[in-house]
Length: 115
Length: 317
Image (tube, rainbow over all chains, first blue to last red; front, side, top):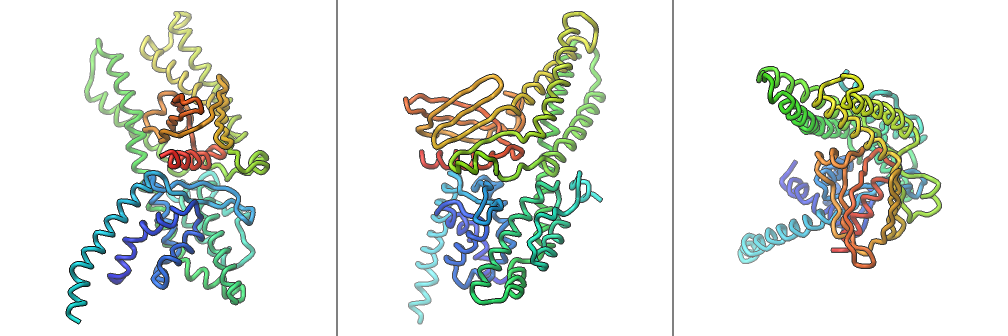
């Protein structure tokens, strides 16, 4: 796994929670939301890794899940962000914002000045 | 062998999960063989994967691929059954060891305390007590952890007549076949309580004073827990109904001030099947009510009620 993929993986929990801030969603729907946000970078995400991630977030009580009949009539498992998850998300977004600002102030600015 | 033990009573793949797409069905069979836990637990994962693959295939077909190529691409994008299975096994194994320690302590500590109290004026052997603690911890911990991690019944998604008719109403209740088991347990635990009570009254001699009190409490605990199988919770909009053998309550929820899972030891107070939850609500008259009830994966609609109350809590913040 290259550095870019490593960074994106670290971002993934934040992105999943952000998708779910828009309302309850199921696995495939969440993936579509991630594709919209990540564009081409989403191609490095193996779909099977999404489910263990959702289960881990659920275990940490950042998400909750429930099943109800979906469009095809078969039960579909939906995930929903919890109050704890929303608080966590706000904290994570703030952390990423600080990292982005730091990069902007240091490396990115230097690069711009050098070129 | 250990994997098979976790899959009791049946390790067979449930045929109603088949999709009619050979590549998907083969994948689901291979994935099922990798998973731990009883059929109703494995089913949740398999249904989720099946739906994902079918939806991915439908999307690719809409984009112009033929059905077979779309199925193949969906599988390639999804990842291997081995990896997904290994991840589930790691997660379940972690749960098993965590539950073993928690359940072992939850049983062994009170048992040791009761034992120490009952022998306070007698002779105490530290070695015997340590041995007894280790036995209680291991035996009960293994049993309860196995049950909690691999063998507890996972109720299906609610497809009751009520929820089909009124999608907004959530009903939480125990499946019929488990009520029958609860009835048998209720009779057995009632007999246990009665025997201890008669022994305490001197009708006959059974376990001694502390033994009778302890086993009598266990009987009462089991009776009360089993009786909770007849509790039914319904949430219709903001109207919450709690119907049990002993009470029938109704609340109009104006605001959910607090809703959370209680600590594991709270299963002792009040005794019930499943994990205790605390709900603090404000009704239309501005009165605050604190309610305790059990929600468990084995109850129909339990997950939906949890999610709805969690949502109401968020909206109230």
